[in-house]
Length: 233
Image (tube, rainbow, N blue to C red; front, side, top):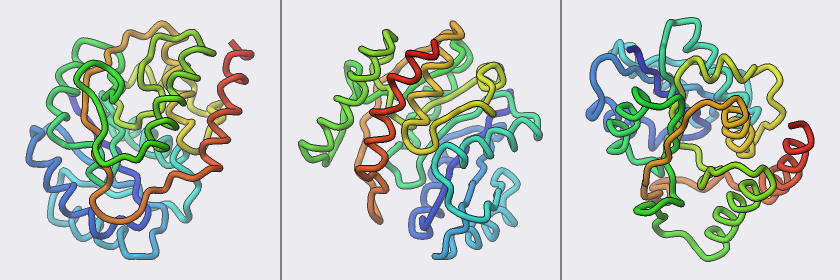
């Protein structure tokens, strides 16, 4: 099985080399990385090219501008389809998703159609989060789980693994969400298609360098999307 870890970036030049080294260090040769850079003005894309030139397991997809998390991942997924990868994993560049969990995710992808690195199951959690952020995160997942009647504990998390057939079966062209609510829509569509899934516990650590890209606009988008998904079902 060929696996591809898709890492979207925008101004992650300080995190990029350490995260790539950490991922490569805990995964086998059959696992590759695709850096999907949205025209970072800080030189992230240029650094990614330099690393890829020295390591055949690292690839780079340059996008002209920042268009949101959803489009960046979809572009990465499509690149993976074109290059024959069987499994595709979503992962942040800022170490909030610890690479140490990748071997577990890869193992579980051999048993389930999609896998969720979950902060909200027993053994999972967050580190260095304020109360308001915890409420937004857990409340968002509870809100989605209740309205959508789906037994997914961590709807909003972005550390997820997919077997190719799931992403091909979802019809990526018709996805509506562009920001972090993309994660809700992707998981719900997979659940509705009756693909099997597993949540396993992770500890989500606040980013080491830089600033969170979470905003009130992203929260509002997620809140408004969930009822529309339910009405479409």
